[in-house]
Image (tube, rainbow, N blue to C red; front, side, top):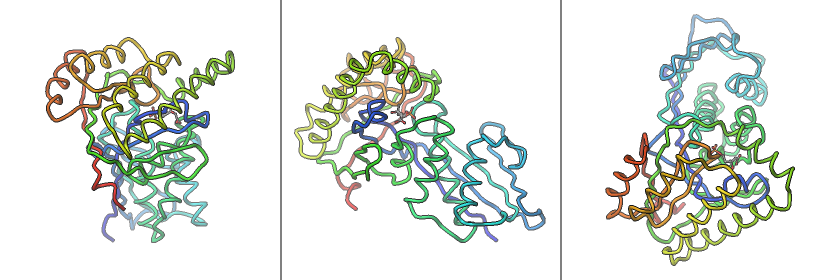
Length: 319
Ligand code: PMV
């Protein structure tokens, strides 16, 4: 039997992170420059449930049965088995590759889950719908994140720009004009679950203040959506920067992210903000073809370890 492979892109959150956990809208876009890939190969000589999982990029090599019950990949495969009502899995080897930086807000966990569900379900002869893939990846996100909003698994499964409100069907965004976003990695790893937990604690201590901040972020997200869909796009940059200031007030930025945001703005970015959970990971900047080179240099000089580009194109959003 030939190997079956599937892949999934990374993602970045344009606006609305953290507030989205509390019911406010957020916008996320795929980053196809990075991706997770899962490859499944039958092992005809193996016994039932003998599943070898390798991830050469992180020197991981083990059998499913040896993983703790809490391991996200184990949970994912057991949920898949349950959904497919299989008494056991045939023996197979599952190889995972990913170019998505870990713990950086680019959705590496969700992308690995999506790629695994697609590859394994196809290998088993029961390919899943996007809805099923996203819902299984959401279950796995709970073991990475604790209380995820569901935005990561959704944007990564459907691989298109989305307007997302927790618990509601997402909407695909159709942008009016092409936009270029430059993503810069601070090189600082940050656990989403930790930062989301701290925001929750702060919200519990001072609900009025935090709900006002979440609401202000939600209002910006709606304004950004309107400008993306109908223009004028000139104001989007200042809304993104305003979103960063609100994230600073939430307490999820850090000096390194602020320095990257300031460097991008000083070098001519139309707007810049941290993206994802914060306290590390990435910032994104709205750039043009003309400002891309100077902003890239400024970001590297300010400590960016990696840069990624993602474009929003009107044509690619037509379904
Ligand atoms: O996975 P990250 O770091 O992009 O963060 C996800 C965004 C949050 O809003 C902080 C959490 C969530 O589940 O939506």
